[in-house]
Length: 73
Image (cartoon, one colour):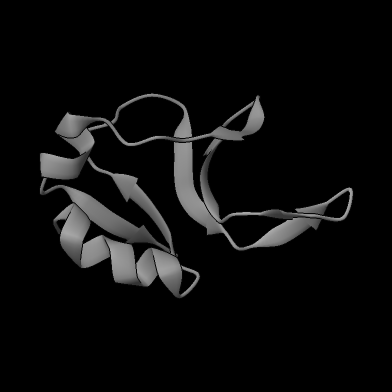
């Protein structure tokens, strides 16, 4: 799937991954709007990496143009 196809699924709560990644990446997911110290926190993407937990995720141009995205069950 392309990033354009996967984005609506991310927005509805799906976990996704690129088949081309061959490392410890488990999945990417969208964290919805929340609040910190009374201030609005905009939605953001995180990636779950085996043994490390979650970290912020910003797709690269290669990620955006890739067509090997898939849903993680």
